Length: 489
Ligand code: ADP
Image 1 (cartoon, helix red, strand yellow):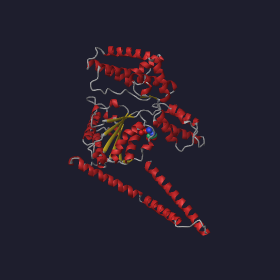
Image 2 (cartoon, rainbow, N blue to C red):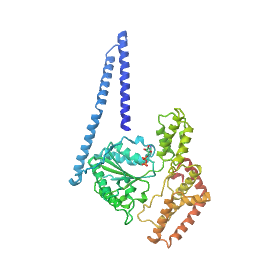
Image 3 (cartoon, helix red, strand yellow):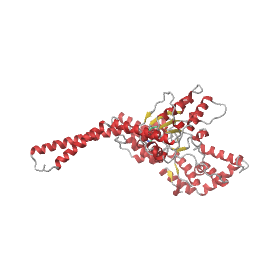
Image 4 (cartoon, rainbow, N blue to C red):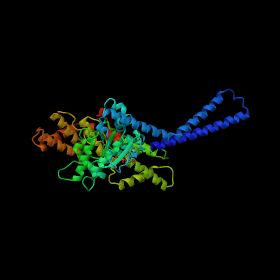
Protein backbone atom coordinates (compact mmCIF):
# COMPACT_ATOMS: atom_id res chain seq x y z
CA UNK A 1 0.00 0.00 0.00
CA UNK A 2 2.78 2.37 1.03
CA UNK A 3 4.82 2.15 -2.13
CA UNK A 4 1.80 2.05 -4.39
CA UNK A 5 0.34 5.12 -2.82
CA UNK A 6 3.65 7.00 -2.94
CA UNK A 7 3.97 6.00 -6.60
CA UNK A 8 0.42 7.20 -7.25
CA UNK A 9 1.18 10.47 -5.51
CA UNK A 10 4.32 10.88 -7.59
CA UNK A 11 2.43 10.23 -10.81
CA UNK A 12 -0.25 12.70 -9.74
CA UNK A 13 2.34 15.36 -8.92
CA UNK A 14 4.02 14.79 -12.24
CA UNK A 15 0.72 15.21 -14.07
CA UNK A 16 0.10 18.46 -12.21
CA UNK A 17 3.57 19.70 -13.08
CA UNK A 18 3.13 18.87 -16.76
CA UNK A 19 -0.29 20.48 -16.83
CA UNK A 20 0.81 23.66 -15.09
CA UNK A 21 3.91 24.03 -17.24
CA UNK A 22 1.82 23.60 -20.41
CA UNK A 23 -0.62 26.26 -19.20
CA UNK A 24 2.26 28.60 -18.32
CA UNK A 25 3.93 27.94 -21.62
CA UNK A 26 0.75 28.65 -23.60
CA UNK A 27 0.19 31.83 -21.60
CA UNK A 28 3.76 32.87 -22.19
CA UNK A 29 3.59 32.29 -25.96
CA UNK A 30 0.23 34.04 -26.11
CA UNK A 31 1.60 37.12 -24.36
CA UNK A 32 4.69 37.11 -26.59
CA UNK A 33 2.54 37.00 -29.70
CA UNK A 34 0.34 39.77 -28.35
CA UNK A 35 3.53 41.75 -27.87
CA UNK A 36 2.67 42.51 -24.29
CA UNK A 37 4.94 45.16 -22.91
CA UNK A 38 4.99 43.43 -19.53
CA UNK A 39 7.29 40.77 -20.94
CA UNK A 40 10.55 42.49 -20.46
CA UNK A 41 13.87 41.58 -18.99
CA UNK A 42 15.53 38.21 -18.61
CA UNK A 43 13.56 37.13 -15.53
CA UNK A 44 10.71 35.72 -17.62
CA UNK A 45 13.08 33.71 -19.78
CA UNK A 46 14.89 32.59 -16.69
CA UNK A 47 11.59 31.46 -15.13
CA UNK A 48 10.67 29.50 -18.22
CA UNK A 49 14.11 27.88 -18.33
CA UNK A 50 13.86 26.92 -14.66
CA UNK A 51 10.43 25.37 -15.26
CA UNK A 52 11.72 23.25 -18.12
CA UNK A 53 14.75 22.08 -16.09
CA UNK A 54 12.46 21.14 -13.19
CA UNK A 55 10.16 19.20 -15.46
CA UNK A 56 13.05 17.41 -17.10
CA UNK A 57 14.53 16.46 -13.70
CA UNK A 58 11.18 15.12 -12.48
CA UNK A 59 10.76 12.96 -15.61
CA UNK A 60 14.31 11.64 -15.28
CA UNK A 61 13.83 10.79 -11.60
CA UNK A 62 10.51 9.10 -12.27
CA UNK A 63 12.02 6.99 -15.05
CA UNK A 64 14.88 5.87 -12.88
CA UNK A 65 12.97 5.45 -9.64
CA UNK A 66 13.05 1.64 -9.73
CA UNK A 67 16.74 1.57 -10.67
CA UNK A 68 17.56 3.95 -7.84
CA UNK A 69 15.64 1.79 -5.36
CA UNK A 70 17.50 -1.35 -6.44
CA UNK A 71 20.79 0.56 -6.08
CA UNK A 72 20.03 1.71 -2.54
CA UNK A 73 18.72 -1.72 -1.49
CA UNK A 74 21.90 -3.36 -2.73
CA UNK A 75 24.00 -0.79 -0.95
CA UNK A 76 22.17 -1.39 2.33
CA UNK A 77 22.46 -5.20 2.13
CA UNK A 78 26.17 -4.84 1.32
CA UNK A 79 26.85 -2.45 4.19
CA UNK A 80 24.94 -4.75 6.54
CA UNK A 81 26.99 -7.82 5.63
CA UNK A 82 30.24 -5.88 5.88
CA UNK A 83 29.28 -4.63 9.35
CA UNK A 84 28.42 -8.20 10.31
CA UNK A 85 31.75 -9.47 9.06
CA UNK A 86 33.53 -6.92 11.21
CA UNK A 87 31.50 -7.49 14.34
CA UNK A 88 30.76 -11.21 14.37
CA UNK A 89 32.89 -14.30 14.41
CA UNK A 90 33.58 -15.99 11.06
CA UNK A 91 31.51 -19.08 11.93
CA UNK A 92 28.42 -17.11 12.86
CA UNK A 93 28.44 -14.99 9.74
CA UNK A 94 28.61 -18.06 7.54
CA UNK A 95 25.09 -18.77 6.39
CA UNK A 96 24.10 -22.13 5.05
CA UNK A 97 20.99 -21.85 2.93
CA UNK A 98 18.84 -24.95 2.86
CA UNK A 99 16.79 -25.80 -0.17
CA UNK A 100 13.31 -24.71 0.66
CA UNK A 101 10.01 -23.51 -0.68
CA UNK A 102 9.94 -20.71 1.84
CA UNK A 103 9.58 -17.43 0.05
CA UNK A 104 10.01 -13.91 1.35
CA UNK A 105 7.19 -11.46 0.86
CA UNK A 106 7.50 -7.75 0.34
CA UNK A 107 5.40 -5.83 2.80
CA UNK A 108 3.68 -2.74 1.50
CA UNK A 109 2.20 -1.89 4.88
CA UNK A 110 3.53 1.05 6.85
CA UNK A 111 2.79 2.39 10.32
CA UNK A 112 0.35 4.79 8.66
CA UNK A 113 -1.88 1.82 7.83
CA UNK A 114 -2.08 0.85 11.49
CA UNK A 115 -4.51 3.10 13.33
CA UNK A 116 -4.46 3.67 17.10
CA UNK A 117 -2.19 1.54 19.33
CA UNK A 118 0.42 4.29 19.45
CA UNK A 119 2.35 2.77 22.36
CA UNK A 120 2.81 -0.46 20.41
CA UNK A 121 4.17 1.48 17.44
CA UNK A 122 6.54 3.37 19.70
CA UNK A 123 7.86 0.06 21.13
CA UNK A 124 8.52 -1.33 17.68
CA UNK A 125 10.04 1.81 16.22
CA UNK A 126 13.41 0.92 17.74
CA UNK A 127 13.42 -2.36 15.83
CA UNK A 128 12.58 -0.60 12.59
CA UNK A 129 15.41 1.81 13.25
CA UNK A 130 17.80 -1.07 13.87
CA UNK A 131 16.82 -2.72 10.60
CA UNK A 132 17.18 0.59 8.78
CA UNK A 133 20.43 1.75 10.33
CA UNK A 134 22.14 -1.32 11.85
CA UNK A 135 25.50 0.47 11.97
CA UNK A 136 24.16 2.92 14.57
CA UNK A 137 23.66 0.02 16.99
CA UNK A 138 26.33 -2.46 15.94
CA UNK A 139 29.20 0.01 16.25
CA UNK A 140 28.38 0.30 19.96
CA UNK A 141 28.08 -3.47 20.27
CA UNK A 142 24.36 -3.17 21.07
CA UNK A 143 22.34 -6.28 20.45
CA UNK A 144 18.63 -5.97 19.99
CA UNK A 145 16.18 -8.59 21.21
CA UNK A 146 15.93 -11.40 18.70
CA UNK A 147 12.35 -12.15 19.44
CA UNK A 148 9.34 -9.97 20.04
CA UNK A 149 6.13 -11.58 21.20
CA UNK A 150 2.92 -9.75 20.37
CA UNK A 151 0.25 -10.80 22.85
CA UNK A 152 -3.40 -9.97 22.36
CA UNK A 153 -6.86 -11.19 21.35
CA UNK A 154 -7.65 -11.95 17.69
CA UNK A 155 -8.12 -9.08 15.27
CA UNK A 156 -6.23 -6.38 17.16
CA UNK A 157 -3.60 -5.99 14.45
CA UNK A 158 -0.72 -8.27 15.49
CA UNK A 159 -0.11 -9.51 11.95
CA UNK A 160 -0.67 -6.05 10.53
CA UNK A 161 1.87 -4.61 12.96
CA UNK A 162 4.51 -7.22 12.06
CA UNK A 163 3.98 -6.49 8.37
CA UNK A 164 4.27 -2.78 9.13
CA UNK A 165 7.66 -3.33 10.82
CA UNK A 166 8.94 -5.10 7.70
CA UNK A 167 7.30 -2.49 5.46
CA UNK A 168 8.72 0.48 7.38
CA UNK A 169 12.19 -1.04 7.35
CA UNK A 170 11.71 -2.14 3.73
CA UNK A 171 13.10 -5.62 4.44
CA UNK A 172 11.86 -9.08 3.35
CA UNK A 173 8.99 -10.51 5.40
CA UNK A 174 8.78 -14.24 6.12
CA UNK A 175 5.30 -15.27 7.25
CA UNK A 176 4.51 -18.66 8.79
CA UNK A 177 1.63 -19.70 10.97
CA UNK A 178 2.45 -21.91 13.96
CA UNK A 179 0.00 -24.51 12.65
CA UNK A 180 1.97 -24.85 9.41
CA UNK A 181 4.84 -26.39 11.39
CA UNK A 182 2.66 -29.09 12.84
CA UNK A 183 2.98 -32.20 10.68
CA UNK A 184 2.13 -35.83 11.12
CA UNK A 185 5.63 -37.09 10.49
CA UNK A 186 8.29 -36.54 13.10
CA UNK A 187 11.01 -34.19 11.90
CA UNK A 188 9.01 -32.45 9.16
CA UNK A 189 8.10 -29.46 11.32
CA UNK A 190 11.67 -29.13 12.56
CA UNK A 191 12.92 -29.16 8.98
CA UNK A 192 10.53 -26.38 8.06
CA UNK A 193 11.74 -24.29 11.03
CA UNK A 194 15.35 -24.77 9.88
CA UNK A 195 14.46 -23.79 6.33
CA UNK A 196 12.63 -20.70 7.53
CA UNK A 197 15.56 -19.43 9.59
CA UNK A 198 18.11 -20.21 6.95
CA UNK A 199 16.09 -18.40 4.26
CA UNK A 200 15.66 -15.38 6.55
CA UNK A 201 19.36 -15.26 7.44
CA UNK A 202 20.29 -15.38 3.78
CA UNK A 203 18.11 -12.34 3.14
CA UNK A 204 19.11 -10.41 6.29
CA UNK A 205 18.12 -7.85 7.33
CA UNK A 206 14.71 -9.48 7.44
CA UNK A 207 11.66 -10.13 9.61
CA UNK A 208 10.26 -13.57 10.44
CA UNK A 209 6.67 -13.57 11.63
CA UNK A 210 5.19 -16.68 13.31
CA UNK A 211 1.45 -16.27 13.75
CA UNK A 212 -0.31 -18.26 16.49
CA UNK A 213 2.94 -19.55 17.88
CA UNK A 214 0.97 -21.48 20.54
CA UNK A 215 0.23 -24.16 17.93
CA UNK A 216 3.87 -25.16 18.19
CA UNK A 217 5.01 -23.49 21.40
CA UNK A 218 2.49 -24.86 23.88
CA UNK A 219 3.82 -26.05 27.23
CA UNK A 220 5.30 -29.50 26.98
CA UNK A 221 3.40 -31.96 29.12
CA UNK A 222 5.27 -35.25 29.39
CA UNK A 223 4.78 -38.10 26.95
CA UNK A 224 2.75 -36.12 24.46
CA UNK A 225 3.31 -35.27 20.85
CA UNK A 226 6.84 -36.12 19.61
CA UNK A 227 6.48 -34.14 16.42
CA UNK A 228 5.39 -30.94 18.15
CA UNK A 229 8.15 -31.34 20.69
CA UNK A 230 10.85 -31.81 18.07
CA UNK A 231 9.54 -28.74 16.21
CA UNK A 232 9.59 -26.67 19.38
CA UNK A 233 13.11 -27.86 20.19
CA UNK A 234 14.25 -26.86 16.73
CA UNK A 235 12.67 -23.45 17.16
CA UNK A 236 14.53 -23.02 20.46
CA UNK A 237 17.78 -24.16 18.87
CA UNK A 238 17.35 -21.76 15.96
CA UNK A 239 16.56 -18.86 18.28
CA UNK A 240 19.73 -19.62 20.23
CA UNK A 241 21.76 -20.14 17.10
CA UNK A 242 21.82 -16.62 15.82
CA UNK A 243 23.09 -13.46 17.34
CA UNK A 244 21.20 -10.29 18.04
CA UNK A 245 23.27 -8.70 15.31
CA UNK A 246 22.36 -11.16 12.57
CA UNK A 247 19.76 -8.75 11.27
CA UNK A 248 16.91 -11.24 11.62
CA UNK A 249 14.08 -10.19 13.92
CA UNK A 250 11.58 -12.85 14.88
CA UNK A 251 8.11 -11.57 15.70
CA UNK A 252 5.54 -14.04 16.99
CA UNK A 253 1.89 -13.63 17.91
CA UNK A 254 -0.25 -15.37 20.49
CA UNK A 255 -3.59 -14.91 22.22
CA UNK A 256 -2.52 -16.40 25.49
CA UNK A 257 0.99 -16.10 26.78
CA UNK A 258 0.23 -18.39 29.75
CA UNK A 259 0.03 -21.50 27.61
CA UNK A 260 3.45 -20.99 26.01
CA UNK A 261 6.37 -23.15 27.05
CA UNK A 262 8.57 -21.24 29.48
CA UNK A 263 11.66 -22.10 27.46
CA UNK A 264 10.39 -19.85 24.67
CA UNK A 265 10.12 -16.89 27.01
CA UNK A 266 13.58 -17.24 28.47
CA UNK A 267 16.22 -14.55 27.95
CA UNK A 268 17.66 -14.52 24.46
CA UNK A 269 14.49 -15.85 22.87
CA UNK A 270 11.18 -13.98 22.96
CA UNK A 271 12.38 -11.70 25.70
CA UNK A 272 10.47 -8.67 24.57
CA UNK A 273 6.72 -8.81 24.96
CA UNK A 274 4.26 -6.29 23.64
CA UNK A 275 0.63 -6.48 24.72
CA UNK A 276 -2.06 -5.29 22.34
CA UNK A 277 -5.48 -4.93 23.95
CA UNK A 278 -8.84 -4.43 22.29
CA UNK A 279 -8.92 -0.86 21.01
CA UNK A 280 -10.06 1.80 23.46
CA UNK A 281 -12.37 4.62 22.49
CA UNK A 282 -9.59 6.83 21.07
CA UNK A 283 -8.13 3.92 19.09
CA UNK A 284 -11.58 3.09 17.73
CA UNK A 285 -12.01 6.69 16.57
CA UNK A 286 -8.66 6.48 14.73
CA UNK A 287 -9.55 3.13 13.16
CA UNK A 288 -12.99 4.35 12.04
CA UNK A 289 -11.40 7.51 10.61
CA UNK A 290 -8.91 5.38 8.69
CA UNK A 291 -11.54 3.12 7.16
CA UNK A 292 -13.95 5.98 6.42
CA UNK A 293 -11.26 8.12 4.81
CA UNK A 294 -12.44 9.41 1.44
CA UNK A 295 -15.92 7.88 1.89
CA UNK A 296 -18.95 10.14 2.08
CA UNK A 297 -20.90 9.63 5.26
CA UNK A 298 -23.27 11.29 7.65
CA UNK A 299 -21.97 9.50 10.72
CA UNK A 300 -21.07 10.88 14.12
CA UNK A 301 -17.67 9.25 14.67
CA UNK A 302 -17.60 10.01 18.41
CA UNK A 303 -20.97 8.37 18.89
CA UNK A 304 -20.00 5.40 16.74
CA UNK A 305 -16.72 4.94 18.61
CA UNK A 306 -18.49 5.00 21.94
CA UNK A 307 -21.13 2.47 20.83
CA UNK A 308 -18.59 -0.04 19.56
CA UNK A 309 -16.88 -0.94 22.85
CA UNK A 310 -15.64 -4.52 22.66
CA UNK A 311 -15.06 -4.46 18.89
CA UNK A 312 -11.63 -5.53 17.74
CA UNK A 313 -9.92 -3.46 15.06
CA UNK A 314 -10.70 -6.18 12.53
CA UNK A 315 -14.42 -6.10 13.48
CA UNK A 316 -14.42 -2.33 12.99
CA UNK A 317 -12.93 -2.77 9.52
CA UNK A 318 -15.61 -5.36 8.74
CA UNK A 319 -18.31 -3.07 10.17
CA UNK A 320 -17.39 -0.31 7.73
CA UNK A 321 -17.15 -2.76 4.86
CA UNK A 322 -20.58 -4.25 5.62
CA UNK A 323 -22.03 -0.72 5.90
CA UNK A 324 -20.62 0.10 2.48
CA UNK A 325 -22.34 -3.00 1.10
CA UNK A 326 -25.64 -1.82 2.59
CA UNK A 327 -25.10 1.62 1.13
CA UNK A 328 -24.54 0.12 -2.32
CA UNK A 329 -27.68 -1.98 -1.90
CA UNK A 330 -29.59 1.23 -1.23
CA UNK A 331 -28.09 2.69 -4.37
CA UNK A 332 -26.58 5.57 -2.44
CA UNK A 333 -23.11 7.11 -2.19
CA UNK A 334 -23.38 8.26 1.41
CA UNK A 335 -23.03 5.90 4.39
CA UNK A 336 -25.72 6.64 6.95
CA UNK A 337 -26.41 5.54 10.53
CA UNK A 338 -28.89 2.94 9.31
CA UNK A 339 -26.20 1.18 7.25
CA UNK A 340 -24.08 0.90 10.37
CA UNK A 341 -26.96 -0.43 12.46
CA UNK A 342 -27.74 -3.15 9.91
CA UNK A 343 -24.06 -4.07 9.68
CA UNK A 344 -23.78 -4.18 13.48
CA UNK A 345 -26.70 -6.59 13.75
CA UNK A 346 -25.15 -8.81 11.10
CA UNK A 347 -21.81 -8.83 12.95
CA UNK A 348 -23.43 -9.49 16.30
CA UNK A 349 -25.20 -12.57 15.02
CA UNK A 350 -22.52 -13.62 12.59
CA UNK A 351 -19.49 -14.37 14.66
CA UNK A 352 -19.44 -15.72 18.15
CA UNK A 353 -16.09 -14.18 18.98
CA UNK A 354 -17.43 -10.68 18.55
CA UNK A 355 -17.82 -9.57 22.12
CA UNK A 356 -20.02 -6.57 21.51
CA UNK A 357 -20.78 -4.86 24.76
CA UNK A 358 -24.15 -3.30 25.50
CA UNK A 359 -24.47 -0.63 28.18
CA UNK A 360 -24.97 -3.14 30.99
CA UNK A 361 -22.04 -5.34 29.98
CA UNK A 362 -19.84 -2.29 29.66
CA UNK A 363 -20.86 -1.26 33.19
CA UNK A 364 -19.94 -4.71 34.57
CA UNK A 365 -16.50 -4.54 32.98
CA UNK A 366 -16.08 -0.92 34.15
CA UNK A 367 -16.82 -1.88 37.79
CA UNK A 368 -14.38 -4.78 37.50
CA UNK A 369 -11.58 -2.59 36.21
CA UNK A 370 -12.41 0.33 38.55
CA UNK A 371 -12.11 -1.95 41.59
CA UNK A 372 -8.81 -3.28 40.27
CA UNK A 373 -7.52 0.25 39.64
CA UNK A 374 -8.54 1.31 43.15
CA UNK A 375 -6.62 -1.54 44.77
CA UNK A 376 -3.56 -1.45 42.51
CA UNK A 377 -3.40 2.36 42.33
CA UNK A 378 -2.29 1.97 38.73
CA UNK A 379 -3.63 3.24 35.42
CA UNK A 380 -5.98 0.70 33.83
CA UNK A 381 -7.86 0.72 30.55
CA UNK A 382 -11.24 -0.91 29.95
CA UNK A 383 -9.97 -3.89 27.97
CA UNK A 384 -6.68 -4.39 29.76
CA UNK A 385 -6.31 -7.96 30.89
CA UNK A 386 -4.33 -9.35 33.78
CA UNK A 387 -2.36 -7.75 36.56
CA UNK A 388 1.29 -6.83 36.19
CA UNK A 389 3.23 -9.72 37.68
CA UNK A 390 5.47 -9.53 40.71
CA UNK A 391 8.59 -7.64 39.66
CA UNK A 392 10.30 -7.56 43.06
CA UNK A 393 13.24 -9.89 43.61
CA UNK A 394 12.45 -10.51 47.28
CA UNK A 395 8.72 -9.89 47.76
CA UNK A 396 7.32 -9.59 51.26
CA UNK A 397 4.16 -11.33 52.45
CA UNK A 398 2.47 -7.90 52.49
CA UNK A 399 3.39 -7.39 48.83
CA UNK A 400 2.07 -10.81 47.81
CA UNK A 401 -1.20 -10.24 49.66
CA UNK A 402 -1.63 -6.96 47.79
CA UNK A 403 -1.09 -8.86 44.54
CA UNK A 404 -3.74 -11.39 45.59
CA UNK A 405 -6.11 -8.51 46.25
CA UNK A 406 -5.45 -7.10 42.79
CA UNK A 407 -6.41 -10.43 41.24
CA UNK A 408 -9.62 -10.67 43.24
CA UNK A 409 -10.66 -6.99 43.37
CA UNK A 410 -12.70 -7.05 40.14
CA UNK A 411 -15.01 -9.94 41.05
CA UNK A 412 -15.57 -8.74 44.60
CA UNK A 413 -16.15 -5.15 43.46
CA UNK A 414 -18.95 -6.32 41.12
CA UNK A 415 -20.47 -8.49 43.85
CA UNK A 416 -20.62 -5.51 46.22
CA UNK A 417 -22.08 -3.06 43.71
CA UNK A 418 -24.38 -5.33 41.67
CA UNK A 419 -25.22 -7.86 44.43
CA UNK A 420 -24.53 -10.62 41.94
CA UNK A 421 -21.52 -12.61 40.80
CA UNK A 422 -20.30 -12.33 37.20
CA UNK A 423 -17.66 -14.14 35.15
CA UNK A 424 -15.26 -11.54 33.74
CA UNK A 425 -11.57 -12.46 33.55
CA UNK A 426 -11.22 -16.07 34.64
CA UNK A 427 -7.44 -15.80 34.34
CA UNK A 428 -7.37 -13.43 37.33
CA UNK A 429 -9.05 -16.07 39.50
CA UNK A 430 -6.65 -18.75 38.29
CA UNK A 431 -3.69 -16.47 39.03
CA UNK A 432 -5.04 -15.82 42.54
CA UNK A 433 -5.37 -19.58 43.18
CA UNK A 434 -1.88 -20.24 41.86
CA UNK A 435 -0.32 -17.49 43.97
CA UNK A 436 -2.17 -18.61 47.12
CA UNK A 437 -1.00 -22.17 46.45
CA UNK A 438 2.63 -21.08 46.14
CA UNK A 439 2.40 -18.84 49.20
CA UNK A 440 1.18 -21.80 51.22
CA UNK A 441 3.21 -24.68 49.83
CA UNK A 442 6.40 -23.08 48.56
CA UNK A 443 6.86 -19.91 50.59
CA UNK A 444 5.28 -21.35 53.78
CA UNK A 445 3.52 -18.05 54.48
CA UNK A 446 0.14 -19.63 55.27
CA UNK A 447 -1.17 -22.88 56.66
CA UNK A 448 -3.92 -23.50 54.10
CA UNK A 449 -4.81 -22.11 50.66
CA UNK A 450 -8.48 -21.76 51.55
CA UNK A 451 -7.80 -19.94 54.80
CA UNK A 452 -5.42 -17.56 53.10
CA UNK A 453 -7.87 -16.80 50.27
CA UNK A 454 -10.79 -16.33 52.69
CA UNK A 455 -8.80 -13.99 54.87
CA UNK A 456 -7.77 -11.88 51.86
CA UNK A 457 -11.32 -11.84 50.49
CA UNK A 458 -12.80 -10.61 53.80
CA UNK A 459 -10.29 -7.79 54.13
CA UNK A 460 -10.73 -6.87 50.44
CA UNK A 461 -14.51 -6.81 50.77
CA UNK A 462 -14.24 -4.41 53.73
CA UNK A 463 -11.80 -2.17 51.94
CA UNK A 464 -13.92 -1.96 48.78
CA UNK A 465 -17.17 -1.55 50.72
CA UNK A 466 -15.77 1.39 52.67
CA UNK A 467 -14.77 3.05 49.40
CA UNK A 468 -17.85 2.22 47.36
CA UNK A 469 -18.46 5.87 46.40
CA UNK A 470 -14.94 6.23 45.07
CA UNK A 471 -15.28 3.00 43.06
CA UNK A 472 -18.56 4.19 41.58
CA UNK A 473 -16.86 7.45 40.65
CA UNK A 474 -14.01 5.52 39.00
CA UNK A 475 -16.57 3.33 37.21
CA UNK A 476 -18.18 6.43 35.67
CA UNK A 477 -14.78 7.68 34.51
CA UNK A 478 -14.09 4.27 32.99
CA UNK A 479 -17.42 4.19 31.13
CA UNK A 480 -16.80 7.67 29.77
CA UNK A 481 -13.08 7.53 28.90
CA UNK A 482 -12.41 3.78 28.84
CA UNK A 483 -9.32 4.48 30.89
CA UNK A 484 -8.63 5.43 34.52
CA UNK A 485 -5.47 7.47 34.94
CA UNK A 486 -3.27 7.18 38.01
CA UNK A 487 -4.04 10.69 39.20
CA UNK A 488 -7.79 10.00 39.11
CA UNK A 489 -7.59 7.17 41.66
P1 ADP B 1 -4.42 -10.34 14.53
O1 ADP B 1 -3.14 -10.78 13.89
O2 ADP B 1 -4.21 -9.61 15.83
O3 ADP B 1 -5.44 -11.42 14.67
P2 ADP B 1 -4.71 -8.86 12.10
O4 ADP B 1 -3.47 -8.07 12.07
O5 ADP B 1 -4.74 -10.10 11.26
O6 ADP B 1 -5.10 -9.24 13.58
O7 ADP B 1 -5.92 -7.90 11.72
C1 ADP B 1 -6.92 -8.27 10.81
C2 ADP B 1 -7.34 -7.07 10.00
O8 ADP B 1 -7.94 -6.08 10.83
C3 ADP B 1 -6.19 -6.36 9.33
O9 ADP B 1 -5.87 -6.92 8.11
C4 ADP B 1 -6.71 -4.94 9.19
O10 ADP B 1 -7.55 -4.84 8.08
C5 ADP B 1 -7.58 -4.78 10.43
N1 ADP B 1 -6.86 -4.14 11.52
C6 ADP B 1 -6.44 -4.74 12.66
N2 ADP B 1 -5.84 -3.86 13.46
C7 ADP B 1 -5.85 -2.67 12.83
C8 ADP B 1 -5.37 -1.36 13.15
N3 ADP B 1 -4.77 -1.10 14.32
N4 ADP B 1 -5.56 -0.38 12.25
C9 ADP B 1 -6.15 -0.63 11.09
N5 ADP B 1 -6.63 -1.83 10.73
C10 ADP B 1 -6.51 -2.85 11.58
